[in-house]
Length: 365
Image 1 (spheres, rainbow, N blue to C red):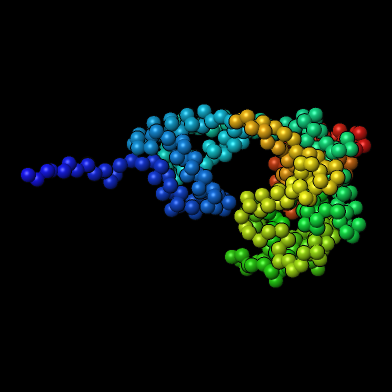
Image 2 (tube, rainbow, N blue to C red):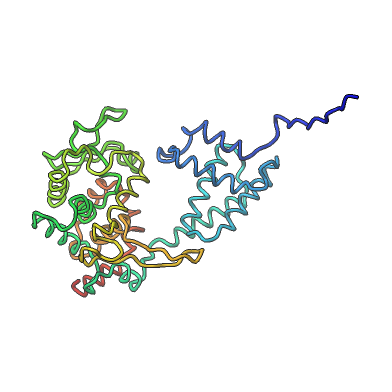
């Protein structure tokens, strides 16, 4: 007697799988993502992750309207994240929705617009003075300001033998005298050590002329495709000091074009305990601000450090609201070097520490 085996029904080839569909369009249409920074593997991987989370139980439900309702619910119920982070998640989901040519429902439009407006409402709102003072308070009871940071860099360079490593001192000089993003400094030291882009230009720092040459690199490459500027005298000294200590050197900071990794490496370098800068314990006795302990959503204690972004925001505030503020024409030229819209910088970055800078000026700190 032959036993008949019961075969499982085959899945229909056209069975709906929204996660698979989303992954497919993200993999096959990267050229349709707006902005070159959104075409990176990291961004696409994050889009896929967010899409899978938002689709959730509706993965195999063919109804587009129910799918959109599920995604809207996901955005509305996000917890333990900042408004800006929620906006970023909505933008990633919007990318996949657009590539799939799904119709944006009224609820989607209203929800994402509400988050966008809430994020905009946070602009022009400076950090409260007491919170800013706690963040930037040094061991001597004064707050860290751009003039104080510049004085530290210059004094270390004048010593010839710096108390801080030449690498950390060079990084500090970048933030003390320029407001550029960390990745802008991740270019070749000398044109001979760089690689040409698609147009044949080589982003590099020229030690002979003490000039930065940035061609279509970094976050602002579309708005500011070519940026050529002479670095501040003390920055040139810090670069020279570092190169003399750490030869041979092909790149100023880091050779990889991975923006997130470049920022992370610079951030980690500034808070290393052996450097004695923005670290726990102040091993070198420089007196810079300690990291501030805080509690995350899971109840765990973590430390909030001074970051390159914080230093850039402090610099943006300094050039507008301190006694050393620069004329508008000069500031606009500086914004081009940084690759910043002057209006955006004014409405957001330059307001963060305005009460702190004005308080420090009034109290001669």
